[in-house]
Image 1 (tube, rainbow over the protein chains, first blue to last red):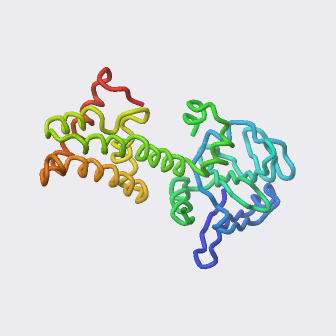
Image 2 (image 1 turned 180 degrees about the vertical axis):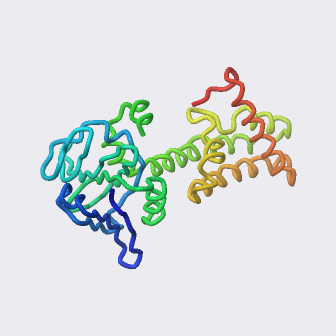
Length: 121
Length: 132
């Protein structure tokens, strides 16, 4: 699973992948400006649907979905082995992904951390 | 989120694209409930000159309409954990107090609490109100 941290001084959200997870996702970390983060939601149901077409990464149905996928014209980054712990992070004005779907240790705490860290209108 | 996708018939990706998160959607719906139902209802109550009529109108119509009970639900479930929800709930409750003040003066906050309590009790009677 990924470790998500917020750096308030740099105003960035970072998702770090450890060990073999780097191999499945083809990344060691993702860094997103907080200004590009629109919100976070604990959403176990999203991982039970169609993930989209794999661009790069790993997909073994029912076991792991990791890497860069395309779905309905959107670019998605997936890292989920256990759907019950999937958190959706919606991005805006991002040059890379429209949405991240990432498994974390404590979905409720991660959602609260992100939601209270992002600027609101 | 699964319930929202099923109830609205809107694609999950579209919900995220428009609202950003489930919390943001909830805040948007609560804001809309305040603007389109709570405040107009409060204005109608405030326009009444008879104290009994004003109280009866508040009990009959407050936190009603298409999003019936949303304010009370937000007060009970999310407001204790979410400061943004708490601010909106406070706005809704203050609107009721302000609406009762012209007819009831200093007793308005106490009567507003009575109205909200009565609305809460009505939710336990399925056939008396249209609930969501």
